[in-house]
Image (tube, rainbow, N blue to C red; front, side):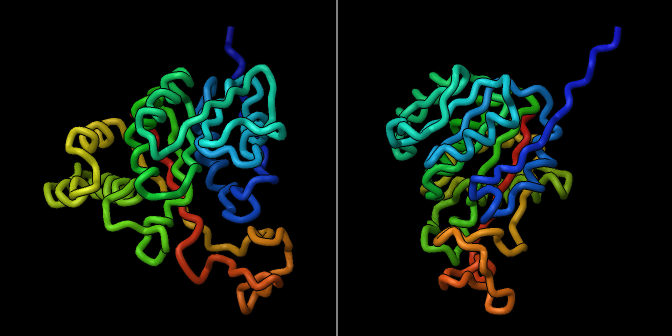
Length: 252
């Protein structure tokens, strides 16, 4: 008897900045449609809970765990399959405790926390090895590590590592000694951490928004000037600098 294939039903994250500002929807639709069965999802960074609502619509039978430095708020979505854990990304011991409490292995982990490059690097080191084979790690807002961004740091971060691995994969090789030395520079990844990540990452796919936002991150308005590339409130559209860069790393 043939087993009925599970159909992936896509829902846009309409209330989340993943949709209206970053325009990640098409990229995520493609990445998530190839993920297979999803039983456990973790997202760093809950904020108002819009992403948790989106994940619940996508995966109605999955356990969804939101990790945030803030205590759970009354407005966050709740049902029998949603849990919240409290951990600050600056506290490595707390991160380890939260990830262990979430109950790996995970099918999908989304890092959308503080956006600080050092925190992005720690979450990658600690989170990606807890994925099941074929699982997906989505690292959002990696543009904060670009030199033009005010949060950028000279230390190697998650963006630098993922860019290097993607390039090496495209060239059909492993990281070379010079790349390893750059990524393990002071403040970067330990040699064992780097080796573990390279061994667990099958593919890296990156996406950077080129379109205008659907709504403004600042005022929520939709009146964008297509020539000045600004919202009517004066906020920029993101085309003028580092903005809206995400990566999908699929685990071996």
